[in-house]
Structures are given as C-alpha cells and as structure tokens.
Image (tube, rainbow, N blue to C red; front, side, top):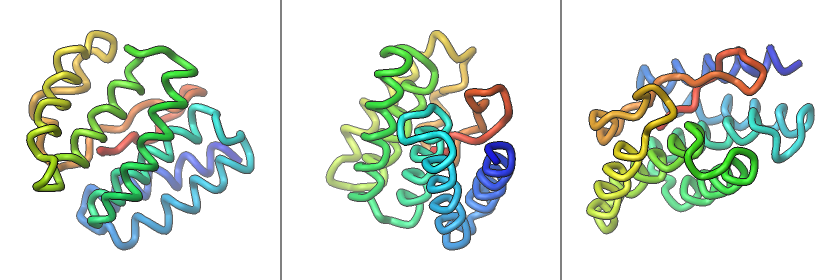
Amino acid sequence: HPDTLGSMGNLAYYLQAQGNHKAAEPLCREVLEGFREVLGERHPDTLNQLANLADVLRSRGALQEARAAVGTALEGFRENFGEFHFRVLKCRAIQAHIHLADPATAAEGRAAMQAAVTEDTGTGGLITAGDAGLQPLPPLPLHDGGIAPLVCA
C-alpha cells in the first residue's frame, strides 16, 4: 500500500540522516520497487523515491548510479510539473550534492546549488544556502499529501 511504502521511505530517510547509509540503501530500493509496482514508473511518489535513492547512493559514494537516478527523477518531475516546481528544484539540489561529492565536479556543484537556491521561489525557502553541505535535506510531501522525504538528500 502507498502509505506503508511512504512510512518505509521515512524510515530510510531517518536511517540516512543518522549516518546509517548501509541500512538506508536496501530499504530505499525496496520502497522504490514497491512504488513502481503500485503507482507506476512516472508517478511523482515513485520519482520522489528515486531521488531519495540517488541521495543515499551519493552518501555511499556510488556517484555514477546516483547521477543516473536523479537524472531520471528530474526528467520525470519536469514532465509532470514544469521547470520551477519544488520537486524539480530539490532534484537539482541533489544533483549539486552529487557534484559536490566528486572533487572533479565540485565547482559545478557549487554553481548548481547557488542556481537552485536563487530560483527557489515555490518551496517557501526549502532550499537554502546551507543545503550546499552534504546533509540530507528535509522531507517533502508525497503527491497524495502524506509525508515522505526527498533526501539530498
């Protein structure tokens, strides 16, 4: 059930926020597969969980897989909501975090984070300059109004 999956996603977020990335990753993957089965590949909650997984992967150093995951989520959110929706901006922040985690692309990450902060007009300030660090970002609401994290995470 989507509510159960959302609760599991919240648990994965809190595991990651506590630094337990090893436990968060399989749970994120399980939640993602559940959302794919129940809601479909392009549903906002599925895309949200894909973005969550991208951040967990970033935390674990799997930057190539993280880039692919957040790229897919970003593309889906843009199709669903347009360029300046808060989920698009949060995915852009996740992309910036991934770049920041890679010394070869850190400068690009700082520029991308600044752009996301500057363009954050629709989230009530959920993206802040402090998000340029590598900590998970706060949870965002599920498409149906429940709460599930979009961690940057």
